[in-house]
Image 1 (cartoon, rainbow, N blue to C red):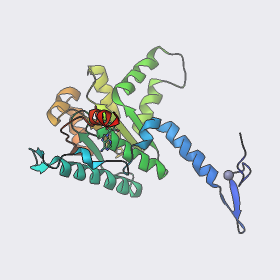
Image 2 (image 1 turned 180 degrees about the horizontal axis):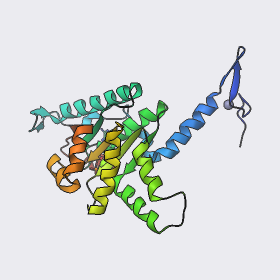
Image 3 (image 1 turned 30 degrees about the vertical axis):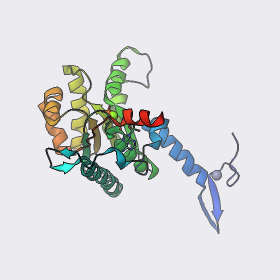
Image 4 (image 1 turned 45 degrees about the vertical axis):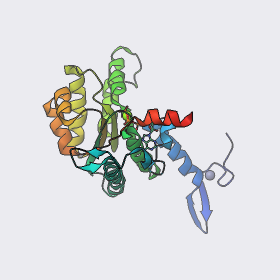
Length: 241
Ligand SMILES: Nc1ncnc2c1ncn2[C@@H]1O[C@H](COP(=O)(O)OP(=O)(O)OP(=O)(O)O)[C@@H](O)[C@H]1O
Ligand SMILES: [Mg+2]
Ligand SMILES: [Zn+2]
């Protein structure tokens, strides 16, 4: 370890006759926050600044709302930015749910929220729902005292901002429904915001998660759509060629 050349590793520097935190501490805290967040290195580039509107057609019309895909994206993007502003002022801000087809930028936008919140010193946990459920299951036959079912579930329940990515691509058994219900219900009761991405429609959410969980999601999240003509993942691959 190289010692910081400003503070010599103490974490404090003198400004006049006052001791203040050295910037190296801020960097370490930020690094820790990232490591605990569950965001992958790739996802650190999913930021509001990097969100490109060119993928959302201004000709194609969202039949439900009668506005273009481009307008839909603008509305959803704005809601994401406003969420961050509000959340930084009030930890009990209402959450968001992004629906839309495969490769429409739902995870990208959820990560943009996460990145902005982390940069502002707040704790975020990003989990892919099927992975979370697998992790809970894996605690049943492991010897690791740190990784217990209770620890995994508590982390998701109590974190100031939870991101549930890919809700709905799992096979929902009574067991998985109950685990999700217990996390979502806790966050509703403590008014802790959750950002959700899903491919499921409103009706499908209810069908797959059960009415008790779905109705709680309605209560705690505002719903937004992202619509695309073509999977952005696919377009980006063509762009690279
Ligand atoms: N607005 C955007 N600007 C730039 N890149 C984008 C944008 N939206 C998505 N992408 C890129 O397209 C790919 C797919 O996006 P993303 O993972 O957010 O889709 P998704 O809607 O979550 O899809 P899925 O339903 O399969 O989970 C990613 O590689 C992402 O970087
Ligand atoms: Mg996704
Ligand atoms: Zn330092």
